[in-house]
Length: 279
Image 1 (cartoon, rainbow, N blue to C red):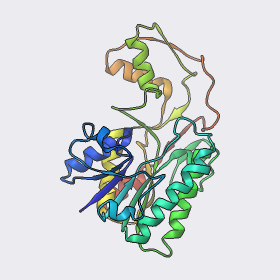
Image 2 (image 1 turned 60 degrees about the vertical axis):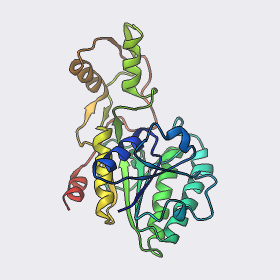
Image 3 (image 1 turned 30 degrees about the vertical axis):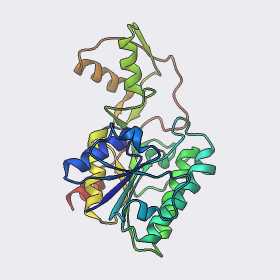
């Protein structure tokens, strides 16, 4: 089975590539700079491909894969940037349209838990999306577009609505890397919000394994929550990490305001995820 991956050099992408290799599959990884990635992904098959200026036949350029795990997306440092709608969305629509029209049979795409909107509580796949940031609106629009595309082209779609991934390779601007950076620099205090907001933190290696497992089943799972299903406060999550790793630093609680673009408390329902993995 031939699987292609976009965004393979990213935080989640590197773990997805590893999960594929562990299953005996050498993925075809699309990248703008194969030479730069050769040492980072030494066992993958690297193909030069820029989504913003793709070749005339990207499906052929990827070697006519059976499935694509589509992780690529730019401008993730700013969820409110209109470039998500004005630049990224059209680029990804055109790229995926061309692959499906050329014969791609299985497509797995990563979305975001922010598609659920700003209401608090348990989030299940049956809930209506109500995105409020440019990034979430763009992702949800792409999902709806692909579902409409299925009416005219026979392909299997799985949409992974990811919650809060963490683990090796995470962005330095993310919560745990900032915490560890403060400790490494000798800081005595780690400034943060009040820490009482409830989140669903999911290990990135686990999420990658789930994405790969469902992609290899080649079934139309639709929307699937990529989460742990275990709500925990941000403060408790940090304190647990410090305790498990025998680290110590004073928490400067309340230094930053709570973010307004996400609910105060939300976590994912894993019932459907478990069903899909067991099918």
